[in-house]
Amino acid sequence: MTTDALQTLTRELDAWTGLEARATLWWRDDDAARPCVELDRLFKLSNGHAAPCGLAVIPAETGEPLRKDVSGQHHIWVLQHGWAHANHAEKGQGAWELGAHRPKSVILEELRQGMRKLSQLFKDHFLPVLVPPWNRLDSDLLPYLPVMGYRGLSASFRHQRPVPPSGLRVADAHCDLLTWKHKPAGFAGAEKCVERIVAHLRDKRAGAVDPDEPTGILTHHLAMDAEAWAFMDELLALVKAHPAADWISPADIWPA
Image (tube, rainbow, N blue to C red; front, top):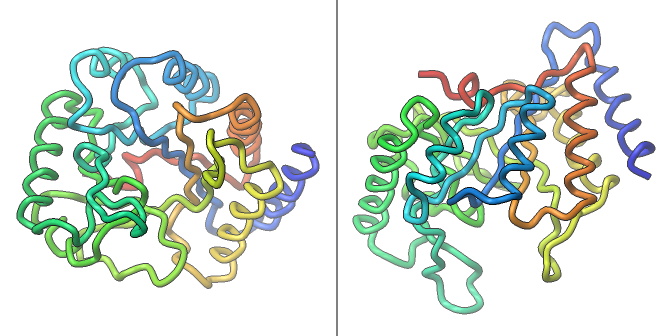
């Protein structure tokens, strides 16, 4: 089943052959805070394919142990995953850390502290890119982000994505490898994942969406099952080997 699904992706990438533009994809992984065997598996996968990954780190929960782990990695960049990954919404409203449930001043101060901490800890591995927990961000916060020094934003807006202010480049996650409908989370399935990846690539090729936004693949190392890891391994290899496709680095999406 995985092979059949990936053949659909190969055909889409084949359609990019001969175009002046290349099919670009990028990898984001969420909820990092401390060293663990799952993160070691991600590093091994990244190194094995020389594949860059944007690691969304929770500032309030991280520290020196993760800094040591990341410092020796050549393909890992740290992004800011909110502040504490804490839900402040009422029951039934969904999970929000960066929503309209608290004063903006409080939220912005937390983000400022988080940026400072990650910058000091991870230095050149850190990129000032905000990844909102649960992919949710109150659009009223957007104008403040570039003023605070953020260069980028990565969420998962499927419809009616707000227009970002000047100086803030958006690169969203277009395919989450996991489904969260049941607990524990599990692999969404090869067909579903390839469908989402191909849909964004096809839209880019047709000019229906921003052709410069890379197609984002989202993993959650702490929740990945064996099928999800195996699919990611195959996906990394397929894209790397295809002459019309590239895995691009978060540092290239959001250059200094």
